[in-house]
Structure formats: structure tokens, C-alpha cells
Image (cartoon, rainbow, N blue to C red; front, side, top):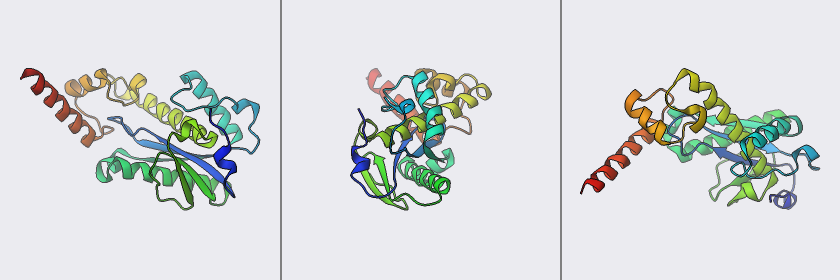
Length: 211
């Protein structure tokens, strides 16, 4: 279970940073930066990696986090993902999330705990933690906020683009989504580089299976 072990080892204001949406064929990549209260309220106890927490519980935690924590959210658009690549777009979203958080608290955090093994360029010191969303409470909180926020965005887009299954797959490359791209084409919310790569891989698989 995540704890405050990493946060307490650092000096100054510490935020947790995490992203969601690196793998989808559609939609932005979104990051959150979160500062938790030093004494975790009972309402936030039991938080864990967003991939482990069930959807309904994630929604509950997200609402409570907006009540009890300081939060900044940042995103990088589909156009930015296609232009600068997904890794740089992810780092851009993280930087925007920290900037938004800094505006909320009126100063820049001293440290950012970032999930993963690569450090984005941020206006504060960075400590990366592999599997951080399962180790640091601040990163776990950021993962929940990022996941719930991006899912809600894709759910809102789903009725405007029926057939792609975004109400359930939120842009990830499920069979329903891939089949819809073949039959309906791509939308302005699709990552053209990702879609082209997916098509190339599928054609290679078809060719290999025919040999």
C-alpha cells in the first residue's frame, strides 16, 4: 500500500505527479499534480494505484480529493502528441499540471514525486519512483485524479462520436474501437500516428498469418 514514506523524506512542499492516457488511439494525455494534507483525512484513507481501485471507488476518491487536497491538472492535445511524440507530450502535460498546482497554492512546490523512471523538466526538484502509484500516497492520489478526469472527458465525447465505444474503452485500442476506425474512419480526436502504427501492425499480423 502507498504511504507518506517518500514525502516525509524530503524537505518543503511535496507534490505527487502522474499521468494517464499514453496508450490510447484517441484523446489527450492528461496529468495531475496533487499535494495531500500532512494528516490524511479518514475520507482519503485506503487510496491506492488507480489501476487497482475499482471505478466507483475511484470516483469517490476523486471527489474527496478535490475537497481535501490541492490539485493541478494539465493535458497535452492530440495535435501535440502527433507533433512532438507521446513521451514529450506526457512531460508537457506534467509540467502544465505542476504549473496549475503552483497557481492554486501561490508558490512552486519544492519537490515533485513522479511515477516512472524518467524525469520531466519541471520548475522544481524531481524524484522519480518506479511503480510510484503503488508506493507514494501523493502519486496514488494524482493517478486517481488523472484517470477519473480523463475518463470523464472521453465519456463526454462518446455521444458525439457514436460507434467508437469511448463510453467504455475511453480511447484505448479495443477491438470495438479498431473496427470502428476501419468502418467509420478517424475523428479529429484520434492520434493519427498511433492509428497508422496500429494499422501497420495489424497488416503485418495478417500477412504473417497468411504465410
